[in-house]
Image (cartoon, rainbow, N blue to C red; front, side, top):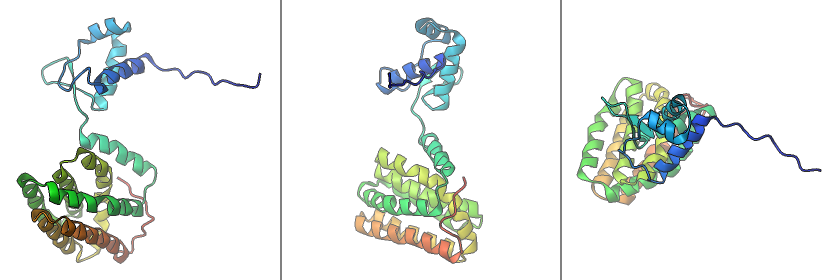
Amino acid sequence: MSVQFEPLAFEPAYRKVADALLERITDRSLSAGERLPPELELARQFGVNRSTVREALRELESAGMLRRQRGSKLMMVSRPERDAIAGGVSRALALHDVSIRDVWEALTILEPPIAESAARNRRAADLARIEAGLGHALEQNAEVAGRQAADFFRHLGEATHNRVLMLAHEPLLQLLGPSLRTIIDEVAPARARIASAQRRILQGIRDGNAAEARLWTEKHIRDYRRGFDLAGIDLKNRIDQ
């Protein structure tokens, strides 16, 4: 007989319990905010040891699918936070040796349309949030200034009120800050140019001018590229979180 079969992979019992619970969460049989039965009751229903249930719950809690309410021993269904989801993707990207060029090109593709959408969908609270962060662009601390640059794009994403767009660019933004720290210190006009571009983008968004918001976002991201060149930084360099 020419056909060969691979041995079946062993799957721990706690993983099967976690998968069963996750299926109920994702198909909305268990809704956000709903409490799970006690561990002993879950163990009885699944026909496993309590320790197996505890391990399954711990795994889902780490993934942000469950949380324990303060003062209660019971687990509650929750939605994973955006930062937690994106953080895992960012770490994976870093482990895959993504480069400065990779992040820059991805921002070039994603951010201008996000700025357009923000100009069409922004609300007063969004404008206030963006405005409040602009002053930090001139911070002398490079880490703070780099974080502000990422936060600016983050707030633009929030102004779209599109959850897919907000989540799609978050992993890149978590890599953007570390990649900018060097040029912010090495290139003298960097802080002023970042602040100026951000104000022009904000003005386009405030005016509801999608074309202007997109145009200045494109210029802003091209300016990042120029900053790396001026600082003598090779775009092939990988980004470490």
